[in-house]
Length: 334
Image 1 (cartoon, helix red, strand yellow):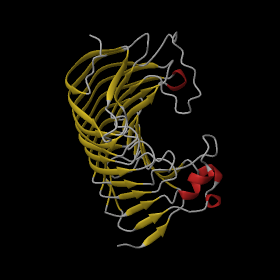
Image 2: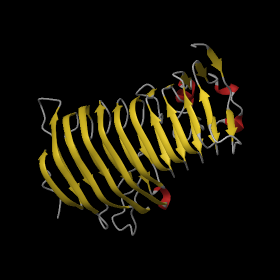
Image 3: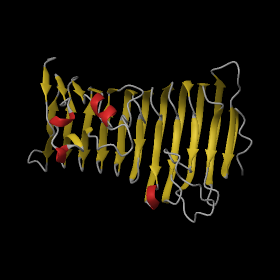
Image 4: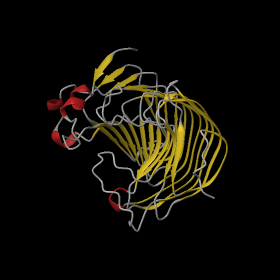
């Protein structure tokens, strides 16, 4: 217990003969600190479990990606490829709990093409300035249960990407970071779909965003049946955001005549309370042709963390209803 182990990139490849596999992590597992120690063809993932069904990973230990050298060397968007610390691909009946994940070169945990996943009791940390260090990224996965997490990183605490459905997130303390996000979806015209995503009883502290749905112009597919409920805000930036003009490098040209967009519908933001550092506390910016449908905002009380400003709301082609909302959402269309 408490011993330190240096681990080079490794793949645990299934399928396995046993119906259950248990990895018990009690010590500190650390990645090579120097980029030159990583083989050039093994720089995408540090620890990978692929097609391992019935897998449990727990034990109270630490998974330390030692990412500082990567953050500085690959700071530009096209600087170099950075590895994900821990990835699960094509796994069924996965349980991950009780570990401390820190300082990944890129995202800390990746869940891709998995079914029936339980994640609980994790602590995930990296400095607020560390680039692309998402806590958990989910893609192409079904029936994922996430609860009782403490996440503070330099990017999304949790990001749910295309092909994912029936994702339930509760009791997550997020901050610093970029919030709990759906997307980004539709990049380079991709056809992405997400549905039945539910976030509740969670908090955002000093995050850049709170509850966010982000899509690129020109994409296809849908994001529907999404809810954020009973959310606490503490000096959070951009608490409620739908952004269908997502462009992180600000190098995109808004194309008002774009013929396609990810269709956003049946989204609810209910029971938000607390403070925001952003004046635009509710921002629903939907595609100018397709728009967003059946957006519900109810029982929201967001005040400014500064006595010098008052929060407000804004909309672009957003349709739905609101009640008991501060700031008022008068721009929401029927």
